[in-house]
Length: 42
Length: 225
Length: 300
Image (cartoon, rainbow over all chains, first blue to last red; front, side):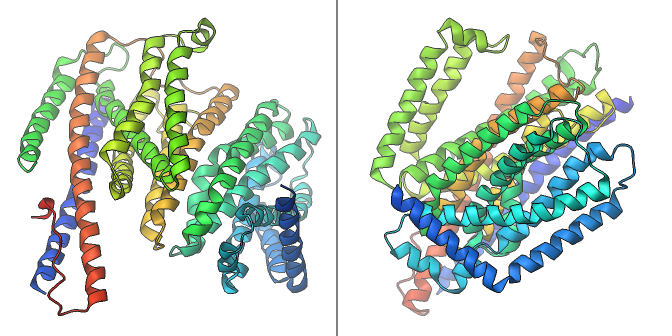
């Protein structure tokens, strides 16, 4: 049973890492869209 | 080909002469190397039974630190006096500059090693149980491996932010196979347990591969600034 | 173009869920390791994906360097074709076949070698000009993400199975660590370099990294022969049912990686357009009406 803890830790860690990266992509996208809007106003 | 070597030699002699006159970097480096050895002596007990097994690693870590400090100021003089711009415009082959810098760094690091090695021998009571002469090819090939890539990456880091940290950051991962070979080879000779033959061949291969790569790409790097 | 992305996303999520089901429920329990071995269904596909992405980065970097001059571009094309032809022919020579590790079929090696020119020409055709560099950045970044997962799941698998988190002589995990370090330094160089030729420098670093990897492999391999290490992953053949699930998992992760790369690619395209617009603005002067962005469809 102790060993299965590592299995779940590995699977969760995988998706946490992917989630963090996708989150950073979303953040960068929204920041760029903000800049596009500002450029459009000028 | 002839002009390449004569140009390399001329640049090398100029660098050595400049360094000898000011002796700034040399003195600082010598003192720094001494301090590194002393810190290691206090951190890793030289009287321990297993010291012979770890000394190989300690010595090369000390050399690595010294090499990085030396490499960081490789191009400093050229940057200060806009020498690089002059070189880019001149028809001189870029590889001459690279070879001169690499050879200069190599000599510089060898001088530092010549200072540090006797200290290690004294503090750790070193005596090679294996063939001691094999330490020479390992030292020469290993030092060249660090210096040739280090000079190249120092040139690459010239226009980056945090230039001093960029050099080791780029250099260390690429140097890992060479470091493994140097440390394992030195340990093999000191402990006499294994043959260092394979490591010497590996270092030679590494040197050939990366010297070729550096010479092939240096011109691109130089014009990239 | 706009509609494919959401559809593909849904397909990918379904595939990933299916792969998860296969990995946890359908695949048989390992006789020796119990259920912990199922980490393999995330660990190995991530590794294969990371290596594929780094390979793409390597090909893109070489092409970028070769495109600087027409002569090198042509020479590189012929060399790549030669590698493909020689590689395929070589696998049919008995002397070469003897040198292959046991279990590796010559046809598999031939196919892998053929991938080199195939990738080279496809990438050259599909990614002209600046897009080649964007591909390099994208594949490096997403590759690092997948490589991180390999390095995290690896020790998590090792600890319960052999009792140690890390074995210095474990050739696969240590080579992966060095590859990770090289590509992290690649990304740092990209971020910290503000020279106009950052792309050229990064491409050169990628080439150095690629030259380094086989040397890393050999140095650790020899080190291991002198210092016996626990055998990880075993060299034996795999239960075909497990292999089946492994491939399903890999397919799912490949689709996922493709979507992530596509997003990152579009992000970089938009980023460069915005940068250009900013540059134009400072050249032309603020308040001018001519600074409209040549917006691509992807930015809306």
